[in-house]
Length: 416
Image (cartoon, rainbow, N blue to C red; front, side, top):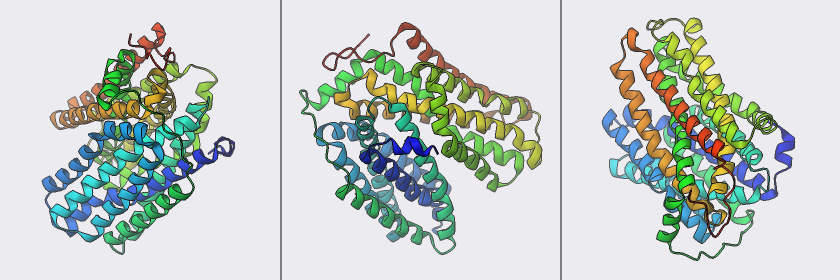
């Protein structure tokens, strides 16, 4: 990571990005191992395990808008603290309960915690970023990636003792983060809202260009989820080893940690924010082309060297595209909306994107099942390419029309 980029952050922003590292360490210390713990140690069937994980996702995604609205009206700092504190409780329940009601309660509270602090953290960081928001979010992403790398490694080490130890260590990590935010994170004045909650939601929905940008940008979130679905499945299919999934995550994480800031600075020096997003989405969608071309020709268990060439190329292109897209998307979202309602706008974006991601992931999984025969293995990857190109086309059209310029007025957000 570029140390100078971190040094330029305000003290509060530094705390927030370090906080995000800790959050990801605690989360990914436990979540990757929950499914195997429930099935192997507790004896639950795959359907029950999937239901618990699905409830966690739904409780987070469905509450994003409420969490963002609460950040606007109650303040970002209380929501960040409440979200972290709730993670202490939820992960503690994973350590204590083995019954299904207890596991469901832990899953729901875990999702609710994410819905509280995710929009709040980004809103607070946006206010702390000044004029270089994309660069600040790039540093934020670096710490996210680093936490995603460290968390599973620490979890795998603790798993040799007991899954419940993972949950307890994660509780300690979240307790430390909660204390740091409580005593160190500065208080920010909350701007008094002039309209009701429903009125603020109506403002967001009627902001046509923000909704159009959100729909285009939902392609990013839909493709991002493929890092956890289709790419690992393809790596496992051609290698025959479940451990090969670690290669995909390892490559993506290393590029994120060591390349994110440099990629953002490189894009900033050459393109506008909108153009960077367009090219990034094209890169993410185009990353599936090598797999699409190779998948019909590679038999089951083709061998690690031959099999991983297209998977590695796809993962590299995918992660570079992700690094190009995300910081500039985070920069533009509040500009197209209203900084007075930043949390609400972020919450709406995450809600819509989560629904799009669920639909695209279902489509990709169904196509992988339907076209499992060698002759048709290119079909799922072509569909994902088209998702990326559709998002890029929508963003490019807005860029050409000048619709990605900042809103003309905080009091009258653009609706055309």
